[in-house]
Length: 82
Image (cartoon, rainbow, N blue to C red; front, side, top):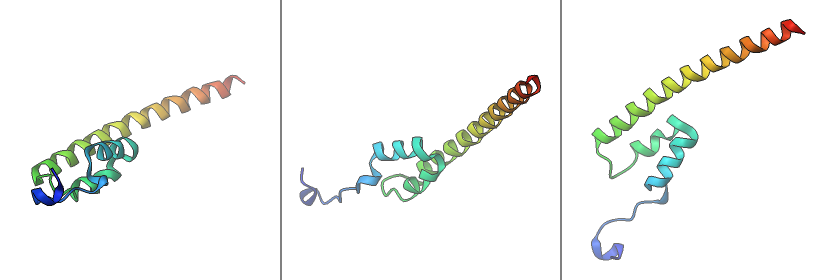
């Protein structure tokens, strides 16, 4: 139906689910304002998505730091050989 006949406003393109998902996959927690300004999400959903994003960001940061430490250790061993 047409947006004028239903009385509902059409959401801007940046609030579409696909855009929000791509934003999270691209910039992680920097996409949280899209969630918090989303007019159709409930406060509970916003809090849930914020907590999930922050926990996932924390664990991915820990994994990245551990990988970096292992790479640096291997690089230092390689330098000691040469």
